[in-house]
Image 1: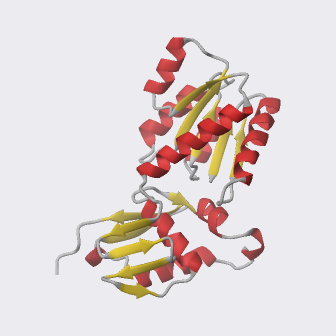
Image 2: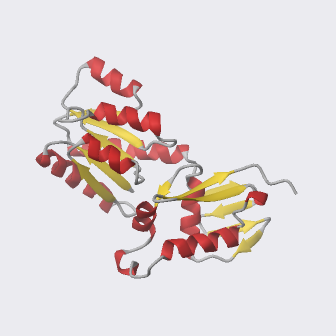
Length: 238
């Protein structure tokens, strides 16, 4: 889980980080928290990296958190979930942020347990929207999370656990660009990063094992300087 926190007050940033670290400790997936004090720095990073959740203060010295939120909704094909966390609590402010695409709105000073609950609720909603829980079925491929297996027309495809989880992530995020750092942080412990190109090797294997080619209705794109995106396409005519 990759989270970006935007707030121009270092003490407030640290308080949010400490709260989310408690959420991360109880989860199955590793969390990676990234803090920003300027909206422009966050937008610059959003152009290069993938995040699952944004927590945005409104009032900042450069561009506002609301402007960052609107930018994600206007310029990103699959924008991350977003929670506004701000001292502005007028009804008009809340309505304006929700209409701009915020998934939730929380006023400062926040209560840590409430923030944790709201983060969990927002992430659950987005997870359900991406339809990835116990299993996935795409064309002739069926994912089984209980057994960590993929079958094609009922026949199992031999895969390692990491290959399975990486494939599951790509299919759960169809059409969504996933940055290299996002995938590395999610599937590779730091001690295994000595290998030069482990992600590229796994992508190559998945293309071959799962038949991620246009004639089967898939296109696994390499996005130069960013990462990868799996797309569903019309099968190539024979």
